[in-house]
Image 1: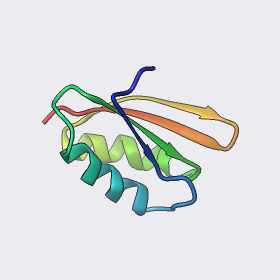
Image 2 (image 1 turned 90 degrees about the vertical axis):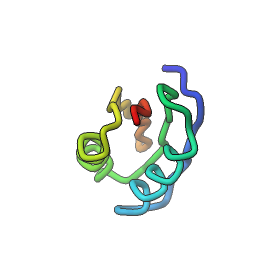
Image 3 (image 1 turned 180 degrees about the vertical axis):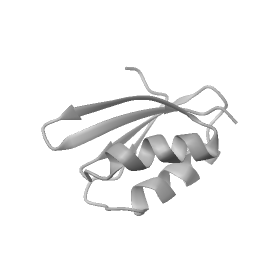
Image 4 (image 1 turned 45 degrees about the vertical axis):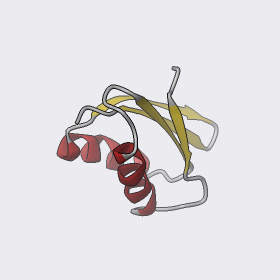
Length: 76
């Protein structure tokens, strides 16, 4: 998946990846896609929940080894 921007949260654990995602997405334009890189297992539950509560669109989560790539589209 092609992302407009990437946020590296490797080595950081809940709730920091969600906090950083929230800050980053506010700087982006509507309909842009953010890729979040994480090695925190909690991101599998945290990001879909955050998207639902924030009104952004959860697109995908891909696991490559110990790294999770999460894709979110800014909706508001």
